[in-house]
Length: 148
Image 1 (tube, helix red, strand yellow):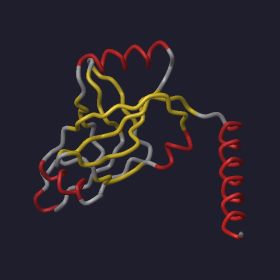
Image 2 (cartoon, one colour; image 1 turned 90 degrees about the horizontal axis):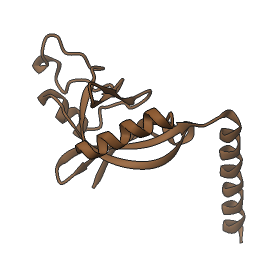
Image 3 (tube, helix red, strand yellow; image 1 turned 180 degrees about the vertical axis):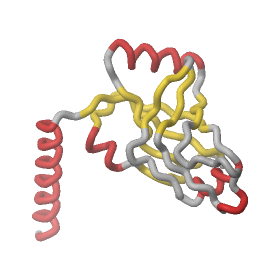
Image 4 (cartoon, one colour; image 1 turned 90 degrees about the vertical axis):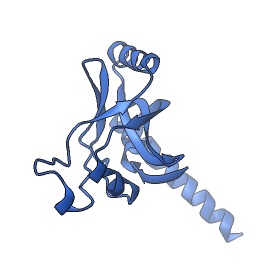
């Protein structure tokens, strides 16, 4: 499994509960861009429309502008491919517990492009401060261990 891109900011802004793997429906000019890491997940999320899950606000520029369709939009919504049972489970969780579905990584698995989705909630400012404090303590401990 080769990780193409990771959304590191999401790990800080959200508290994750569960992880899912989904396929993604791409155009031909987008596949090569994604395989070369030309994708941005900053501000991206997954939302339901008509019982189907879509990736929103993920920017994928075309590999070659000359070969892209005339009306190509790099921020268009892209359909995520999940089993019906997983979709129903996610719909229930997002409606009943007010959770969000966040894309955290895009990777290759058996030469197919997959999206790692995590179900979670937004961290409060107090929780973010605790995360920063724990990270600084861990760095200090590692620094002290290396000194010996």
